[in-house]
Each structure stands twice: as C-alpha cells, then as structure tokens.
Amino acid sequence: MTLAALYFLSMAMKAAANRIAERKLRDRQARRAQIIRAARRIAELEGWSNVTVRRLSDEISYSQPVLYAHFGSREGILAAVAIEGFQEMGLALEKARKGAQRGDTVKSVAAAYLEFAASSPALYEVMFSLSLSVPFDDAATPPELRFAFSQLLGLFQGQSSKPEVLAELFWASLHGIAELTRTKRFPRSRQKERVRALVELFNFPRDETARW
Image (cartoon, rainbow, N blue to C red; front, side):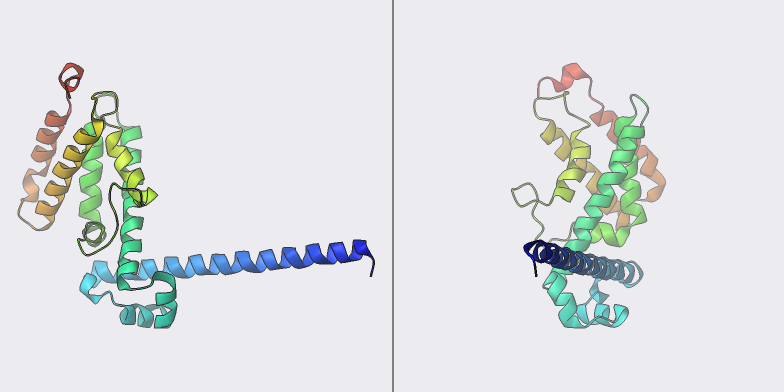
C-alpha cells in the first residue's frame, strides 16, 4: 500500500471515529435532556419528593446506573433541573427587558419574573432549594445563573456605583413576593398593587442613585 493510500485510509478512519464520537455525544445529550424532562414532569404533577432515581428509571426505561452515570446522584439531577430553570428564567427576563417600552423596563422585568415563578412553581421551587450544591456568586457559579442575574443587573447599570446591590435588593423583593404568593401568605388579588409599589421603589431618578 502506498503512502498516499495509507494517508487517505488514516483520514477515513479518523473521520469515522469522529462521527462515532459525535453520535455518542448527541445520544448522551439526548438522554440527559430526557431525564431532566421526566424529572420536571413528575415534580409538576406530584412534587419533588416523588422524583427519585428509581422512579425516573421506571418512567423513561433507563437503568439506574445510566442515570447515575449522567448525574452522579439524585441531587445531581435536581441541580441540572435548577440550572436549566435559571437559563429559562434569564431568557424570559431578557425578552421582557428588551421588549419593554421606555420607562417601563423595571415593571416589565418584575412582571416577567413573577409570571415565571407562578407558571412553573415546581421548577421555581427547586431553583432555590437549600439542599442543592449549586453555587451562587463565586467562581464556580454556572453561566446560566450569571446570565439570569445579568438581566436584573442590566436594569441598574449606569444608575449607581453599586448596581449589584440594587439588583440583589430587587431580586430579593421579587423572590419574596413570589414565594409568599406561592405559599399563599400573600393573596394573589393584590399582586398588581405589589408590583406597582415595587416598581415605584426601584425606578430611581438618576440623582438619587448617584449617591450609592
């Protein structure tokens, strides 16, 4: 066999190996997505206590070792769901922020945040579960969490020397309203009034935010 033939054979073998590796990666990503979808579906219908590795294995006909190979543990599955939730929330806030009329950005983002929490209660619950080891505000914070927070941060950029503080306070207010409404401590009938009052608090004139 000539050197040219050996070269082309080597290239063909390498291309075939790359195709196999790419297919395996796609298959792995598809299985991972299927597991996450199943976990979310069970949680929305029955609560997170029913989302177990055994139940997921029965639900999607994958062996438990396959689930552990993808996520390591039940907590790993829930953490993956939570991270996906932050990506979806970030996209919802980004859409609200970019589509808002001038002067209505804070109101639009607040409404989008509360709508997200109300429309996906189980997802929102796991996103803020204290039992999950999903880091916030450090070097290991997943990009999905940073993306979601950046939508809140963008509301206060250029209005303060510490926009992060204002964004955190705004987020804390929204989260408090969402949780207290979800757990029926706040009546939904006054939600519009709450949003209106919150927006008034955070629509600072520039001369007021300059002192931060």
